[in-house]
Structures are given as C-alpha cells and as structure tokens.
Image (cartoon, rainbow, N blue to C red; front, side, top):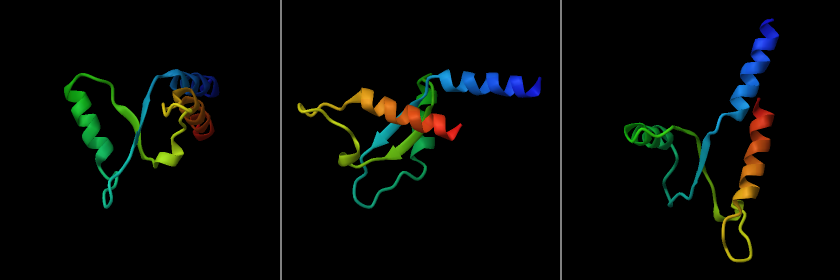
Length: 86
C-alpha cells in the first residue's frame, strides 16, 4: 500500500505545472539568492513560485532562423531532465 501511495504522489508531482526561469547574467553576478528574491516578489503578487532559476548563456537557448526562442525544444529538454531527477 505504501509503495502505491508513493507512486501516485510521484505521478501527481510530474503533472504539476512549474516554471523554470533561464537568466542571462552580467559579468560578476551570480544566481545566489535570486530564486528566493523572485519567489518573494511573486508571492506578494499572489502568483505561484518558480521551481528553478538557472543561469544560461545565449548558446544554450535554442532559437529558430528568425531568432525566436524555440519554447517547444526548451520544454522537451527540461521535461526529460525532470523525469530523470524523479
């Protein structure tokens, strides 16, 4: 019974929407404390918290020939990473 409940909770977590934010950092800046500060602001606006905040360089963000970010490819990449973490 315990294993079944654990599996149900795991599946429920996989289907919960969550946001991952990619940020481009300026020289000398890091992400230390940035997630907490962002979530504090979002909480004050009655918005859901961010799940993760990651530093990214321009080369790691997929873009099409027009320069637009390919969000579908980002979702696929991060969904695969989320499954491997569980």
